[in-house]
Image (cartoon, rainbow, N blue to C red):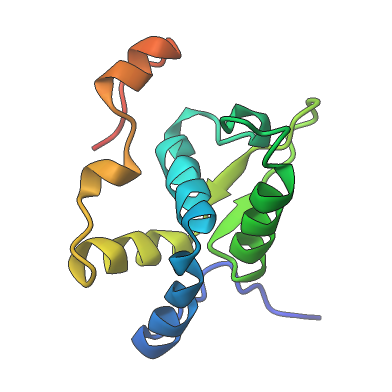
Length: 124
C-alpha cells in the first residue's frame, strides 16, 4: 500500500526548478486564479476569460500545475470539478512572495472581484 503524499513539500531547490514553468504567462495566470478562488469553492476552468479560444493553452497550464502537484481537483458530484491549491501550491505562493518579490495581492481576490461575483469574506 502506498503512503499518502498529500503533505509532502518540495525542498527549495526543487521548488526553484519547478517554478521555471511559470515563465509561461498562462501557467502563472491560471495558478493565480486557482489561488484567488481557493476559499470560494475552488476555481472552474470555464471562469477563465476567452476559455473557448484559449482552451489548449489553458489546458496545458492546468496539466503542468496538476502534474507538479501545485493544484488539485476535488470532485463534489456536480457538473464541474473545481481546482484548489495544494500544500505544495501554498509553499509556491510563499516562494513567489518572499523570493520573487510578487505582491501578495496577486494571489487574492480584490474587493471589486468579490462584489462582482457576490462573494463574501475572504480569509486573510
